[in-house]
Image 1 (cartoon, rainbow, N blue to C red):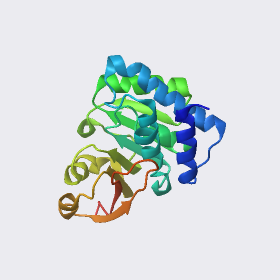
Image 2 (tube, helix red, strand yellow):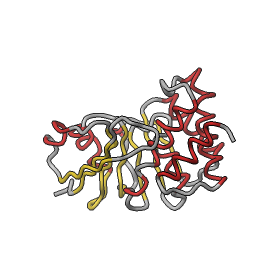
Image 3 (cartoon, rainbow, N blue to C red):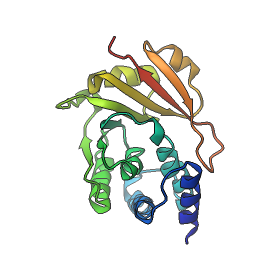
Length: 207
C-alpha cells in the first residue's frame, strides 16, 4: 500500500466514510490526474500527492454529511473540488460543475470521462452568465469569494428552499455579519489538517 493510499484510508475511517477499494482507487486516480495535468494547466499550487490527499480529497469529503437535495452546483469548481470527490460517494446526486477558466473545465471534463462519473457535468461559464434550466437544491463553493458576493452571484441558481454551502478556512465573522439571510456556522475537522476549517450554511435566501 502506498503512503497516499494509507493516508486516504486512515482519513476516510476517521470521517466514518466507506473505504471500499473502488472509491479509494477513483480518488487516488483523480489526484494522479491532477498531478499529470498540473504541469501544463496549473490546476493547483499543491504539488505533493500526500498533501493532495489531505487538502483536496479529505478536505472535500469532510462536508459530505451536510449535503442536501439531489441537484447540486459547484461554483468556481477549479480542478473539480469539492464535487468530484463528493460525487464518487454520492452517485445518486447530480453535480453541475461551473468555472470560468477554460483550461480547468477541460481538465474536469477529462477527469469525468476517465473516472466514469455519469452524475457529473461541467460547464465553462461565469456564474452570473449561467442560466440553468431548473434551480439547484444546493450551491457549493470553496474559496470562491466573500460570503455577501457569493450570495449575490448565486441567487438565481438556488431553488426556493435551497441551501448555499460555503467552505471557508477561519471563521469569517465580518462576512457573516454582512449576509442578509439565515447563517449556520459548522466547524469541520479534516483528518491530518491542523488549520481551521468551517462550513457556512446559508438558508432562507428567497424571503
